[in-house]
Length: 122
Image (cartoon, rainbow, N blue to C red):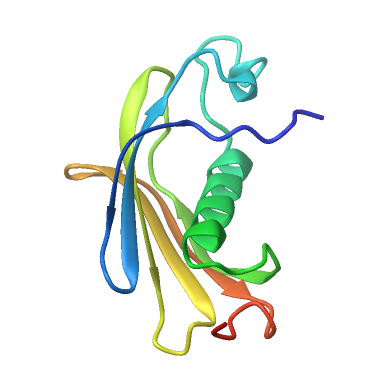
């Protein structure tokens, strides 16, 4: 099993209930090994891991996911590319809404439903 490694953060912009990271998807990340031989592709589970870890860290929630909702993978994320990861929280602070994109190109999106204790404001 590959240890979770976050991508290189090129920039971060925070708003009240939202944040955007510009990420560099380096070809040297271990997740590309064997996924796939003809064309390396960043696995969807890695994209989810990053959204959960970065979102929970930014909004100061424990990493406790209850379920995933409306998860969509629209385009492949390739090595040596830059993408933006945008995460916002709903008004009840029980969900993180994420999307990966680059200008008009959409890569992935979904909602992360947190466990009841993790959405409580500290």
